[in-house]
Image (cartoon, rainbow, N blue to C red; front, side, top):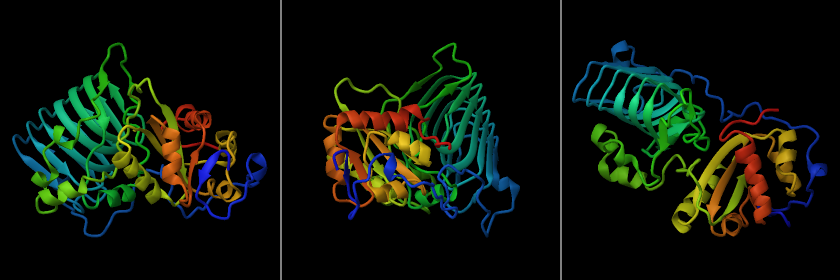
Length: 365
């Protein structure tokens, strides 16, 4: 194929609109990556309301390990100089009137509200983040939607960094795709001043909180934590930071049910090509009409055209020297993986997937 390096054996060159199926058939048994509805409660749920609330604590550790929250809400208020380790999936989080605290918050399918708090650090994964009347907060963030700040100042944002043995399972239970992280796409309701910044990309979990093994030593020890963090669950993206002057865009696309191949590709980039920036990732369903527009300058094989509209596909955007050829090399001869051949086609596909449509958002029919 002139336009794509592809790894789907037995494909035919049926590019353009003629090769697209007449109907985009959606498998209704799939769990769509953008569906953040509350997951069912599980057996063994702790019934004591006090288990889900922390109030008026000072200089304490407050931990909830895997399986102890089970999709419920957590509320934390009026705490000072405390360390919170919430290592389970939950429905929502409310933090009010806290100062000098540090938080690790596992996958939160709904909203995380941070209000009237100051000088706190968060490593947090959530569907929506809202801050109000806050100052001096630092976030290592996963957020499925645009983070929102209001009447807040000196707020910094970086990409989520954290991992433990069943974090990916918790993301799946919360129905949150690790590829849809809009951590840098900030919306400020009070934009009259520069109220927020994007933090340095070199910051890691240890710059925000104490090691997870400190908070939940009965669940994860220091050696296991070091081993687990070598491969992060959430791709560490560059986001909307300014790009270097020199380089080119590269794009790889992974068909439905090839998320493991996408993560392997991202790991290869980090280990073998550290000069390339992982700028954006995105998982979404691409309806037929959008697919025709997005791939209008490319020739997808017939099998790919049929498959790409049936479930969530994953796009990975890179920037750096020889990004196009690196993408080609890493996906060559692999099933369900595609990379454009030319810089011009890569730029078109990048703009269609990441710029024209909302970053990490979902295509609409």
